Length: 352
Image (cartoon, rainbow, N blue to C red):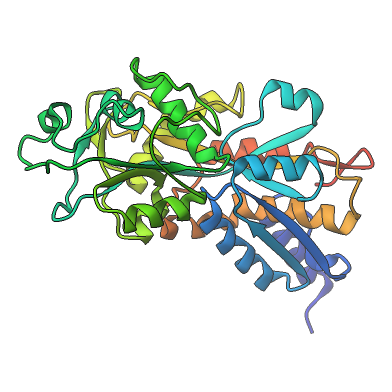
C-alpha cells in the first residue's frame, strides 16, 4: 500500500511541475464549450494546441475560427468570442474602452512568396523594392531594381501580379509595419487594412497562399507556415545588418531574441526590422487577447480559458517548431505568466 507521505509527495511534485495553474483534474468535470477566433497567422499551432488539450481534458471543447485579427478583436469586444487571436495589438484608444490583456503565445515570420514559372529558387529583395512592388511602382519581374539584386537569375519579362489580404488582418499589420519602419518609399502607412492601389485580395493567409499558387507571376505575403505548407518559394530579405536572410525557425527566433526586451516595457512592442546578425526582418510575436475580468461567463469556462493559455505558453511550446513557429523565449513565458495572473473572476485572481 502506498503511504500517505508518498502520495503527498507526488501531489506536491505535480503541483510544482504545473508551476501555479489550477489542476483541472481536481475540478468538477462539467462540459465546457469555448469559442474563440481571430488571426489566421497562428491558426495552425492553435489548432494543434486545442486538439492536444482536448486529449488531456476531454470535457473542454475549444473551437477557433481563423477570421482575421480584426474580426477576432471585434468578436471579443462583443463577447461573441471568449478569447481572440491577434497579431495586431490593441491601440491605446481600444484599451481605453476595453480592459483586455495581451498574452504573447508564439512567434512567426511574414514571408514574401511568389510564383514565377521555371524559377523555383530564392530571390533577393529589399524593403524598398517590396514597397514599390506592393504600391504598383514596380510592375515587371525583370525591372532593373529586382534584376540588380539577383544578377545570376534570368528574371522574366512578365507583369507582376500582386496578391494581398482582403480582410482585416494582423499579417497585413505586421507586413505594413515592417515597410513603414524599413522603407522611406512606403506611402500606405501601417494597419490591419490599407488602401491597396493594386492586387488581388485573398481572405486569410490560406486564401493568399492559394491565390499565389494558382496565379503565374504572382507575389504576396503570408505567414511562414502557409508558404511551407503550400511549397511556395520565399524571398531572402535584406535585414538591418545588410544581410539577405531567408525565413527559418532560426532567423525568426533570432529576431525574437533581439526584440524580446522591448516587450518588458510594453507587451505590444513590434519586433520588425530588428538589428542583429541572422535576424529575419519581418518577424512578430502574436497574442491571445482576453478580458482582464471574466465574470461575465461561467467560472468553469473562465478557469478553462486561463488554464488553456497557461498550458499553451508552457507545454504547448513543444508543438510549435514542427509547424515552423519558434518556441517562446523563457523570459517571454515569464512575462506571460505575470499577465495571466492578472485575470480575475468576481475580482479574485483565477490563478493561485
